[in-house]
Image (cartoon, rainbow, N blue to C red; front, top):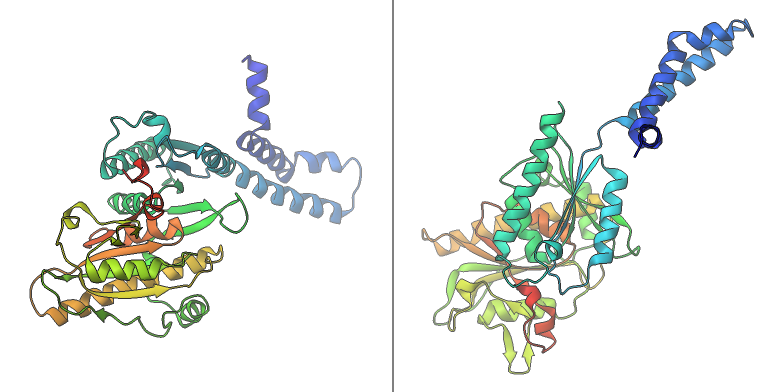
Length: 378
């Protein structure tokens, strides 16, 4: 590209256009144009209007050219899952809204999936790429870069990514997602920050009562599972349904109460217990609690997402403390999270519980439908 083409591209860009607008309006505000206006009119109000308009446009120019942070598009689906069009939607959204974009696509990094690392290793690799890009932006500017995630992944992978990102706290870290209600529009999800650990206000609890079956004024009841031989009594199951899934709660209760992922040969729940718990006779949990929004999807409201995330975290903390008191011993309480809901909330829960013994139980829809376990769950 020649110099003229490069100049044209710069001027037509958001940053270049903003810089040109600032330079022009600074000249107006400082007096170049007012000197010209003196040759045309002597009315004071004309000068005042031009001066105010120049200041407003100067601010608009600053807004256009200011740094807009880093957009990180992360697709953790394997190559066999056709997600290319959805990844493209996220990439376009990031490029429109952010100064810089980083795209990490598992299907492109490991197209054959023959030597793909495990889930935790893939997530760690993604987090390292994000860290490297952030450090590069820090080195090139004075301000701490704003980081926005555009994530496409299984819920378990999103949970693990949130957990890993908690090790590298950023000044600003937000999660966007594809809307379930409005086609393929990209909408704000959850802002990852200390505010998620703040106590909920009365207004937020009132908002919860309109969307959750759980008591908004208190906490859902921790239900003890009758003792059976081999029971892992130090474990509790946190069952959360925030989206349409008719049998999800019953299936999760069955796994928690029996330690079995199938009702019988022809009816698998689709859940895959973590490797340490998958052995025959591993036993059920000691108790469970349910947070249920029923079958409707939560509205696309980032404030509601933040509130629901905080409420789930509160429920987990309270249930863990209550169960530890009931057991009356020094055994650490562990949790199995059965979750069905928006991906940003799964990421945020991973971020909030990064230091807790809480594991999100993966659900394989193909397995639940009776097909062989899919490679997507690897």
